[in-house]
Amino acid sequence: MNLNVFFIFLALAISSTVPIHGQTTSDKYQAVINDAHQNGLPAIVALVKAQGEEVWKGKSGLRNLENATPLDIDQSFRLASISKIFTSVVILQLIDEKKIALTDTVSNYLDAVIQKKIPHVNNITIHQLLSHSSGIYSFTENNKFWKECFYNGGMSRVWSPKELIRYVENKKPVHRPVAPNTEKFYSNTNYILLGMIIQKITNNSLSSEYQKRIFTPLNMKHTFLEGYDHQHRNSIDSYAIPNSFFLKSAMRKRGMKKIKGSKLINLSREYKLFNSWAWAAGGISSTVNDLSSFLSALRKGVLLKNDTQKILSKLNSSHNKGITYFGGTGGSDGIQATMLHLMPSDINIIILINSSGHKHVNLSSIFGKLFKIASQK
Image 1 (spheres, rainbow, N blue to C red):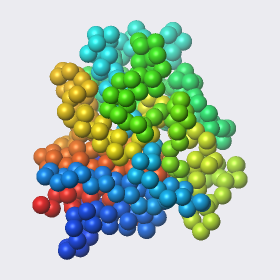
Image 2 (image 1 turned 120 degrees about the horizontal axis):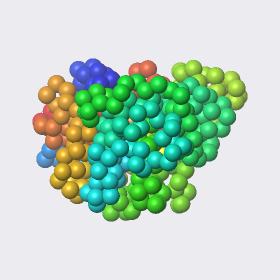
Image 3 (image 1 turned 180 degrees about the vertical axis):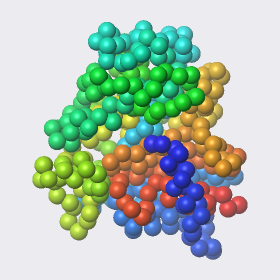
């Protein structure tokens, strides 16, 4: 998700009203997410850690609307692009192990078939993939990819990375490769390539490397890569108000029905591996508790050495109106997620939502309200 867009909505949200005085801080946080549920979100979980306060965690809504299944705080939600931080950590760990270098060109680690599909492949470095400075076209900009997903079962199966790269073939780059962090075109293709490079170097699956290097050491018991989980765990159902062209047309082509008394469709019911296509660019599911452990580890530098920790911080930090945001956000049909640490206020906020398309309540508005409460000390 583009953080610049997130900041625009965040500014509006911070200027909005928050729950009335006289409530405890915990009550105010809970009132925010209860209000979000009452205004149409099927389910939301959130965590806030403000300086000098105990961690607050809350939930509101249902795991499944059709069966009125209760929501558990440890239910896994899809993360979308927050997954990229996990991928970048593994790459940076491989740099720490001297198995790869930031300045290595990606052609060193890709087979000839893939190389032919990537313009300027001999001039693109690992660092440029990490920082979205490669200029490589994003396969998610290709309507043929979404047609395969929505119409032909593409979200009910596991994709190979090579299949995804096929949607980049014959597509002009957005720009030539530039110095890392000097120009950015957000491309999901960058992180699919990084996932392929991880598998090439380690001779292991991406999901196994996540597990070995991050999930197990941090005791993240409810975090997994959708479609590649040997325990066959399921994420919470994802819902959407069908506002986009592809969702509207998929409803007609597949005979999809809205939930009775609702504007929502259940994407998880229609598509059995709804987000597995995103893989290294967005395929992880997790919980607020697991993400809290991950965010803490990222900030403390326990996963990386000093030099690579600095790179990670630069890759995942943004600045807006005197606030530094470290972490990430993610969004797609049926998914809204954020995991951010804010300085100088020293506040952690994690929000996971299992729906999209709502006009009056969204990730940014909820984040802004929680941040405003956490800042009122």
